[in-house]
Length: 330
Figure 1 (tube, rainbow, N blue to C red):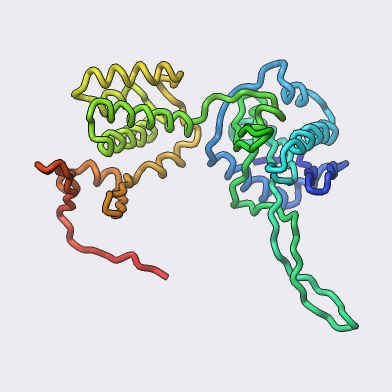
Figure 2 (figure 1 turned 30 degrees about the horizontal axis):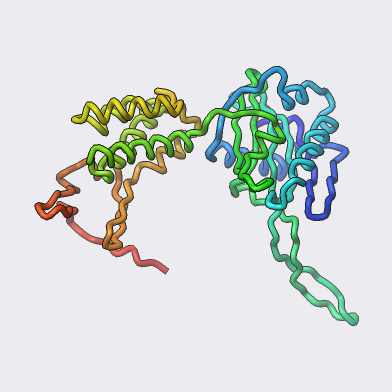
């Protein structure tokens, strides 16, 4: 990453103070560059939403200004006013930057929430030096920590990657960062699409007396394999694999995902995150036993098998075990 501009504005809603920086940071400073580089990498690994800025969008219009400090101060002022509407939104700093990445020129806004941290302070009491503990209420997150709100805009095509969470505003949970501050409506996130797919599979499996644990396990396997192969989730393939022998269930699943506006192929921007997340099948039995089984092992019936018993219960058989290692640790 080559950073051309970077500036930090303080949004301290606890004290009602917006402290806008009048000049940019020194981007040649190795510490500044390293922090921005790592925090951007964390943003791109999160549950991002995507979309495109329209010509009449507030942020799009702001990006046409030449003076970086003035432009970002205006953005900071709007965000500060938006945050003031809810005590639930954490105070913090707004990091704004422009850089060139592998994908091309990028503009970024990252809200860095304050976190209270204790630090030592050397003080003097009655002419004696005392090392005291002091609570700093405005420590920024480490470069390796995940942030809650951010947007990265590709300046070539105005596409963006958005990271945000909902906060309670006027009794409703609202994605204030996109809706009230940036005035954009991002596409449905990969996480939200997967949650909808999961609920749909679960409901239809229950309706047609399909084993729920098996239907969800197959769904996870298809999602993992599809992402690994193409970087997308193929919803038709889920229907085909999960409800192979049940035409009615397959048809109803397809109708439901269409009703819920889930595309036939769901693009996954951060494939590494989801490949890692879904490579292990996890089960919890009514006995309290919890199992984590690698996805390739789960599919191998010479290693793992669920058996339906005559009395309606199930047995889980683990086969071909050469050794057992206890994972007790301290």
